[in-house]
Image: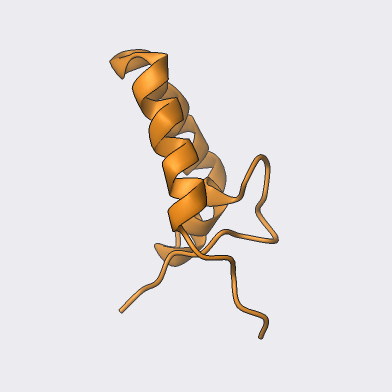
Length: 64
């Protein structure tokens, strides 16, 4: 089972998109582009709120 963590290496704001990219072996830049597109397609406020909630829910990357 894959786990999503806040990324320490691919961090731009909080590391959520980087963590998703690392968990699914996708380029984090592509994940960020999809998030920006969805932000404008659905309205800015819903995705911003989702991003903030994800920041609080997703655990930090464990020290290896």
